[in-house]
Amino acid sequence: TEWPSDAVSADSSIALCVVGNGQFAFGLKRLVIGRKIGSHSLTVQAVKITDDAVRSCHVLYAPELDAQKARELLGVVGTSPLLTISDYDEFTQLGGVANFVLEGGKLRFVINAGAAQRARLQLSSQLLTLGKRTKDSYARH
Image (cartoon, rainbow, N blue to C red):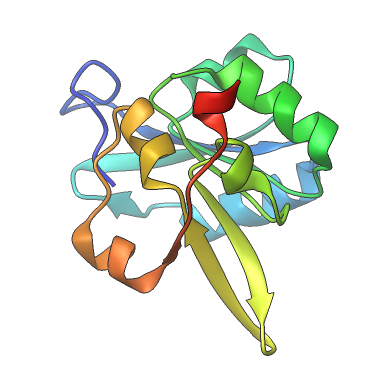
């Protein structure tokens, strides 16, 4: 994923955020200590859906959502340059960028390229090839 230059500068870190689940954020933090994506160091924080900090994230993972919480989160995020990810089955249909799904006992992911475009994110062609694509109902809102 590539973010617009006004969202990630050459010397900034990439903020990985987890909505609500402090334990998941703690585990993720342990995994990324000392790792980089290109020249960018990684930071991890737990956030709440209503936190202003949500907009300062670059990747936002929101586990265990329902339709109401997903809509609330996507309303807060708007068109911010955020890679939004969830495990809620209808997340991409509601306007999220990606969601994880179990198919045949394997973890797969679904991509909403339109949501990525609205967030001004460039997804690699390899990522788009690996993920199942879907459209959302954004235009109907």
